[in-house]
Amino acid sequence: MPVPPTSGRLQWTDVPTPLRARLEDALGAPVTDTVTPAGGFGHQLAAALRLADGKRAFVKAAPDDDPLTAANVHEAAVLDALPPGAPAPELLGIHRAASWTAVVIAHLDGPHPDLSPASGDAEQTWALLDKLTSSPAPAPYAAAVSTTPSTAAALHGWDELAANPPADLAPAARALLPQLAELEAAWAALAHGNRIVHGDLRADNMVRDHTIGVTFVDWAHATTGPACIDAASLAPQLVLAGHAPADIAALLRDHPATGSSADTTTAFLAALTGHWHHNARKPAPPGAPGLRTYQHRAAAAGLALLGYRLNGTLLQ
Ligand SMILES: Nc1ncnc2c1ncn2[C@@H]1O[C@H](COP(=O)(O)OP(=O)(O)OP(=O)(O)O)[C@@H](O)[C@H]1O
Ligand SMILES: [Mg+2]
Image (cartoon, rainbow, N blue to C red; front, top):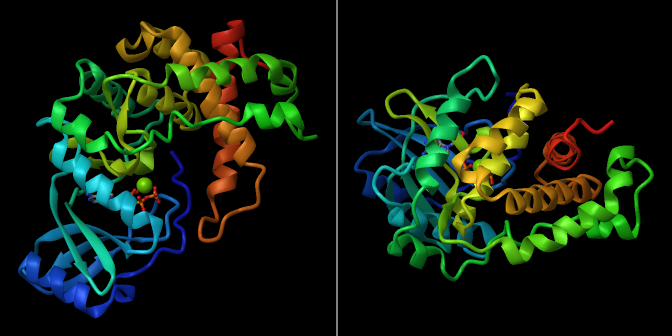
């Protein structure tokens, strides 16, 4: 799948010298090379460090007054609390110096998964989601996310669009606006649950590690919720990657994480698609050049899936 373009990320040389020294000390060797992977929309440092002893580590860092630091600290707590066997890299440490914070994570070696129909990665990802959500989140994980509000629960957009429909809104969406706004309004009350939710599952938040296979990264939005959230988020991504919406609609109907909660899944998909349709029309935020284009494409994919769920057919 085409990965959204890399944004203007902070580089290793932007990190204050005392924090770089602290990290090299903790890692046990000087940094000889850094690679900023493609993918994502953030502006913080997110880089693979190569060390003089040949080892590698992945580090995310930002100034303490940047909201991303709170997100990184949350991600570190989540990584530390996920159950053994969860598809996530190991947390190696948190380091603070010069009013910056760095989170060090085990390096995964490989590309983003290929979610296109030609690859087996999508199938592997569905299987990981089944395993991740088949039982309640363990207590340490639930505690780690207990104070973080769910970004998934707050998703909406059709309410704003219904109040002031933009001229370029797809006719299919325009015809369904009242129904979509109603479905979306039901979502917040359905958004609670006791399963692990990654909360931002896209190909660029996964790495297909050469040794351990597909692994989820970027757990900054992790929370607890109903089992369907990640599988239903992944569904439009698979459409963007070239799968037929009808095939993905059938998968959603049959997958253990979504099949037994059809109304919750539809409400969530409506809220997510509304969020994309609404946000795609806002001015581009600084430092995230690919975001609005991506949201337009994702909005169309989400609407295609909603068409199958609501009308049993592709909306024209
Ligand atoms: N442990 C890791 N090992 C190797 N590469 C990783 C690792 N974690 C993340 N990456 C790569 O780095 C990129 C950025 O990481 P991540 O998504 O965690 O950062 P972010 O700034 O929170 O992202 P976003 O821009 O999506 O908000 C990912 O798209 C992935 O390619
Ligand atoms: Mg990311």
